[in-house]
Image 1 (cartoon, rainbow, N blue to C red):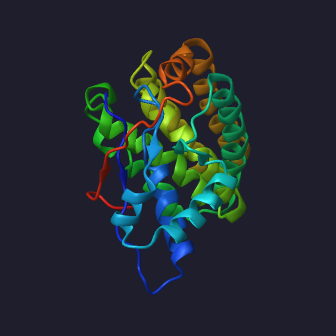
Image 2 (image 1 turned 180 degrees about the vertical axis):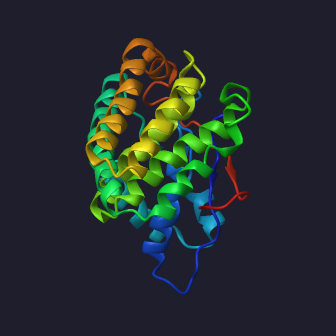
Length: 254
């Protein structure tokens, strides 16, 4: 399976180059599926420069910021690589996400409008009469959107910022594992219970259900996540050169 493409568009030259490039690259990396193929994910500075329509200076500045945030790893004489985590690191990140999303659900139960909470049902409307397992890509996207929406409905900007750095990894692992071990069917039932608790304004139940749901993902990775270390073992050895990354201009950044 080829490495994922990073989808970027030319930046708005009317804004600060570094900040615009930083935001564009960050969103593009978050949108990548970085665990569904063997090998490292390498970014090509020259190709990014061509795609974004800017010089390499603001790209280097943006990549330095992204490295400080843990999104990329800059290796002298080798290149720039999107950071991937080991199995144990992923489990710890999921546990951290569970704690943050639990608090977000509690806050959403207290703060979100009735209309916003009702809109959560819309994410799963297409699966009322069809099985998620038969439409896995669509359900996977709805699943990821649900968890991001819970964070947003908390109204806590800091919670959103804190989960951004986790999201690239949590999103990829959710998408990669949702079709396994009958998780999709159990997931949609969990979502329905969380939404019901939110609509009842039961903050304690909403927080508990959100936490237990995400900890279920941690348990799944604990049992079946050896593929994460397996992917690392298939990565090219240090010093053997670059792993090319196909760059695409289609799609853009959400």
